[in-house]
Image 1 (tube, rainbow, N blue to C red):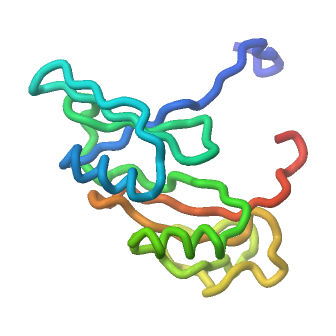
Image 2 (image 1 turned 135 degrees about the horizontal axis):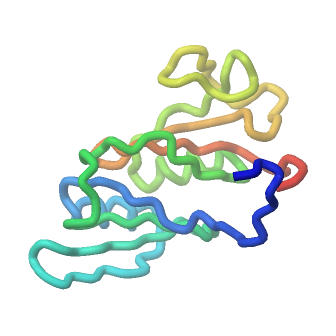
Amino acid sequence: MNSDHVNSQNMKLEVVVLPVSDVDRAKDFYKTLGWRLDADFVTDKDFRVVQLTPPGSEASIIFGTGVTLAAPGSVQGLYLIVYDIEAAHAELVDRGVEVSEVFHDIGGVFHHAGTEGCITGPDPERRDYASFASFSDPDGNGWVLQEVKTRAPGR
């Protein structure tokens, strides 16, 4: 395949599959976040699909019974872009979600994996893409909030 080839077809990420151990518990958790329940289909005892969408997002998550062989909690680094990291953090706390403190990375570009290089508080200059907070669902699937007020060029 020629790397200079321009693809004329749009390719939109619309669904991320999450592995969970308890479908109803996961459904309740994501509804607690204020996410819209789009579907809950059961075809038999071995197949159920639940779909939810975060507010303002064009992408959704699905989970259920018989939809993935991945281990529950094995999905990490799912990003939710927010306009105001501190307001988003406060909203999660108000909804009863255990969320990290807002942080930024010592390098100022992108946060390191885990807690290495993380400094408490938002980026001192409040630069876009530089302030974060994180949380996990009941199975340990990991989410990161990232503050972006103005998108980088080309986005």
